[in-house]
Image (cartoon, rainbow, N blue to C red; front, side, top):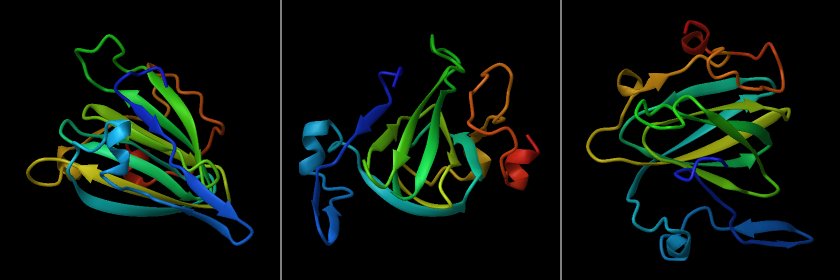
Amino acid sequence: MKFKEVKIHRPSIFRDYRGDYWTLWHADEDEGEGLSWLKFNHDKVSTSRKHVLRGIHGDSKSHKLLTCLQGEVYCVAVDNREDSSTYLQWDWIMLDDKSRDRILLPPGFGVGYLILSERAVMHYKWAYNGEYPDVDQQFSLRWDDEKMAINWPIKNPILSKRDGAL
């Protein structure tokens, strides 16, 4: 990932003939990855079908830790901090249920993702002070904005009314 502020974490996974077993979050174990100082206070789960594009949304006060629990998604991070040298630049990572990679986005970064598998389940873990930064406190960026020129794997994704109206 080109942004030093955005962190990618890979948990250790125990696999055998029955499947796999891994820890989604454990403050003591994640201390070595520099995450233990975060006080997570909110979890969400999103399920989507193939070719759904979610996002690009973010806010100025929360950290978001995203993990793909099932499926495969093309995940894009966008720097939306106007005073940053990487303002409106983007980078991507493939998140899936095999690597179990997690992406941690700090305040000011937007995230959007496109579902590549038939179905995907995403887990969000939020850390913020005060009230939850709901839609009215979030920023939204158009998925196909020419200024960002994001290289999405498909041209006609399925969008929410919110994302389609940007």
